[in-house]
Image 1 (cartoon, rainbow, N blue to C red):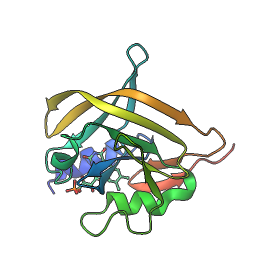
Image 2 (tube, rainbow, N blue to C red):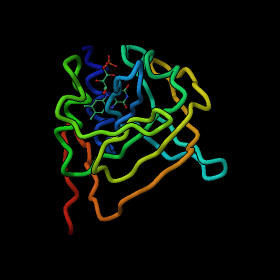
Image 3 (tube, rainbow, N blue to C red):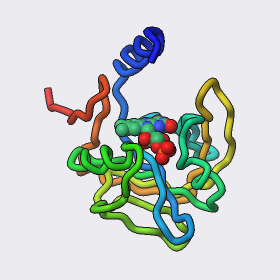
Image 4 (cartoon, rainbow, N blue to C red):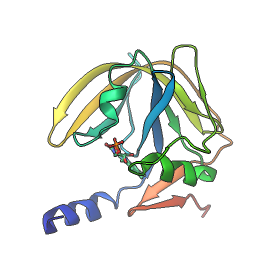
Amino acid sequence: MTAVRLELRRVYGAYPTGVTVVAGLAGGRPVGIAASSFVPVSLDPPLVSVCVAHTSTTWPSLRGLPRIGISVLGAHQEEVGRRLGARGGDRFAGVDWRATVDGCVLIEGAAAWFECTIEQQVRSGDHDIVVFRVRDLDARPEVAPLVFHASGFRRLSQA
Ligand SMILES: Cc1cc2nc3c(=O)[nH]c(=O)nc-3n(C[C@H](O)[C@H](O)[C@H](O)COP(=O)(O)O)c2cc1C
C-alpha cells in the first residue's frame, strides 16, 4: 500500500462508525459483507447508503437480489463483524442469522435491521455509493452498538 493510501486509511479511521452486515440469500445461501460505511440518507423517501469497494467479490452476488438486509451489529457481536469482514472462509459459520420471506438475511441479536431494495448506485472513485430504499426496519435501543474506530472494534463507554 502506498504512503498516501496508508495516510488516508489512518485519517479516515479517526472517524468512528458503527458496523453493519449487508446480506441476502443467493441460491438459498447467505452471502454478505461487513460494512462500516453505512449512512442514513433520507427520511422521505426512506433511504440509507453503503459504499462498496470495486474490489468486492461478494457485491456482484448481492446487487442482483430483490431484497438485501442491513443489520447494525451490537457490541456483543464483534466476532460477527470480524467474520463478515474477513476475506474468504465461510462467513456465516457460527453466525446466528435468519432470512425473511423476501430474502433479506438479518443477523439475530443485532441493534437494528433494515430490509431494503437497491435504489441507485453511483460510481465514486474506487467505490460505488449504493443507495438503498428502506422497506421495513426495526431497532432494539437496549442493545449497545459495536463501534469501529482507528482500524479496531470498540465499545461505547459511558462518561
Ligand atoms: C469493520 C469492517 C468494515 C468494513 N466496511 C466495508 C465497507 O464499508 N465497504 C466495503 O466495500 N468493504 C468493507 N469491509 C470489507 C468487506 O467486509 C469485505 O471484507 C470485502 O468486501 C472483501 O470481501 P469480498 O471480496 O467477499 O467482497 C469492511 C470490513 C470490516 C472488517
